Length: 353
Image (cartoon, rainbow, N blue to C red; front, side, top):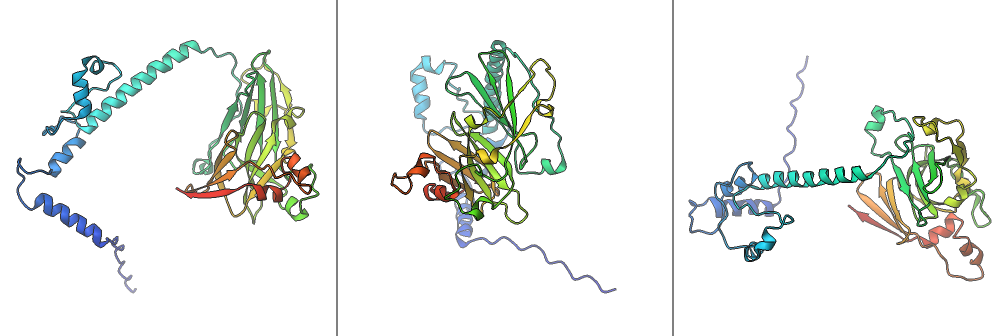
């Protein structure tokens, strides 16, 4: 039997000449002669002492620090509980541990005080989560988002029951002023905007994808829910950014009983499943872009979409109002009801992380 050929060692990382010069200069400056207390500079021993969990063997005795001089001149400030004390003899690791301990103590006390003032009124399990090897290794994150409109009478809750991409998105609202009343609806997304006026949309654009899956959701403002979708197609899986008016769900939700605490809400037989694709007011297909998640701001009229690789962000200007001219008056009144119109008004900018 012939011997196996020898395995070549992995290639050595290349070093640029400037890197070599930097290392050579460092060695020459710090190791060419014995260290003298009268010579300015440092040794590795003096640097390494800051990374040990013990007192400094050579505390810094150089020029004074303006901040420390200020504290010495103002004892009333130095003695304040809000000033972190200076310990010249302590290493960085010791100071780090002390800071972590202090911050943890502050947060624990704050949590206890807040907990004493909060009363749990009702508890409603939303869903049962089952972890799988695929979900544990997935880049996507399961989410639940809540929003209280400016009038303060309702709480909107949007959630999914497993890691995205998923087929269904749950929208729930309940009153803060009346007796407990849960309204829940299951949203799925087929053809987008099929119930809108499609006179300006090409047939190929409308029927490009018959089904979409949910990646992420966020509240754009008090009246609009933004959803990040993914085309459920074997060949094309571009992402889609769409806007859904919350008022369009008013007559779609189902009332759930609130007297059976412990019952998982998503397992109720009374939940209606609605094709929310036809309720979408406007949308924008992100060509050749597979998204991971996104964030929106209605006050700034902007959204940012994170690529699946987690290394790029694309910004979208969501202000889609058009100039009022005779040919576009109808579409501008309806907040741009077609993908082609939106594409003309949403400006994008990509940022590498």
